[in-house]
Image (cartoon, rainbow, N blue to C red; front, top):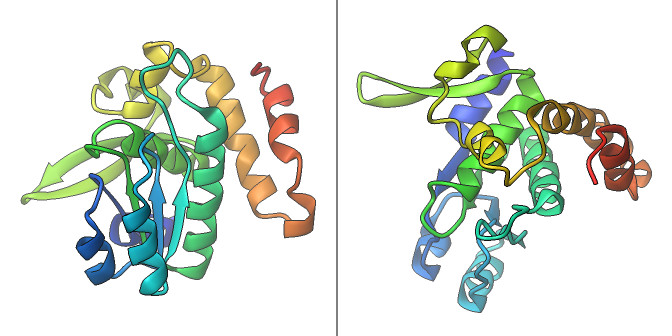
Length: 188
């Protein structure tokens, strides 16, 4: 698990929408945009510098935040982790949608929700035991579940736990698995 935690802390960067020059200068192999905005210049900057750019729009203003986009973003993050590659995961301001996806990935990989703590001015992620989850006021995944923007907690946790075996399977097997996971998790 230490290997995952090290990769998560060092290689998965979450932030605001970058401008094209930041994409060009950034040391990232993958850029994942989960905002509902698409700026062609950002895509062009990524392609011109050999970076892989993905857009999985999540609309935080609707009653359903976008499970399909979360699933797709998790799959790319998992590929990046397997490659030990760097990822820049962003939404518009870098405080809700992108952090929700990062929290979902952390749960998918550890089976525990993430608490972000500051130690010596450095933010670190800590896996929290289920009995401590009520203290997680800064966990965006749980906040969006509680706000009704994502499926109920147990359904969402079942969904996330079901994603990992699919992502670790042969790529030719992965097609159509999202619907199967939604059914077994009892999500719409």
